[in-house]
Image 1 (cartoon, one colour):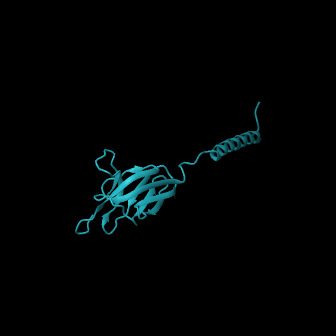
Image 2 (cartoon, rainbow, N blue to C red):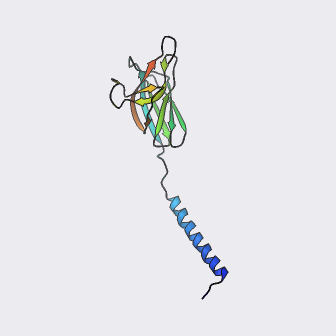
Length: 146
C-alpha cells in the first residue's frame, strides 16, 4: 500500500511541529545559565600598616557575562558590589595616588600575615560570590611607580 505525497508531507509536518513543541517546552523550563543577584564584599587596606583605605574604586568582571560592576570603599575600607550575574568573577582594584592597584590574588598558602588577598599586577585569581576578606594594596615607590 502506498501513501500519497500529500499524506507523507502532512505526517512530516506534524512530526516537525511536535518536536518543535517539545523542544520549546523544555527550553521554557530551563534554569538560568548563571546565578543572578550575586554579591562580593571585601575590606581594602594598606598592605604594610593594615589601615583601611577609603574611596578606592573596585571593579568586578563577571567571567560569565563580561559585565563589569563597580563599587567604592567607605571610610572603613569596606566595599560591597551587588546585583551581579555569574558564578566566577575577576576583582580589580584601581590604583590610587599612594597605592598600587591590580587584580586581586588570593593567598591560599597563608604567606600574607593578616591579609587574605593582595592586589597584584602579575598574578590573579577568579572568585565566587561571597566575602573575599581583607585585600592589601602596596604603597607606591618614592618615584610613584607601581
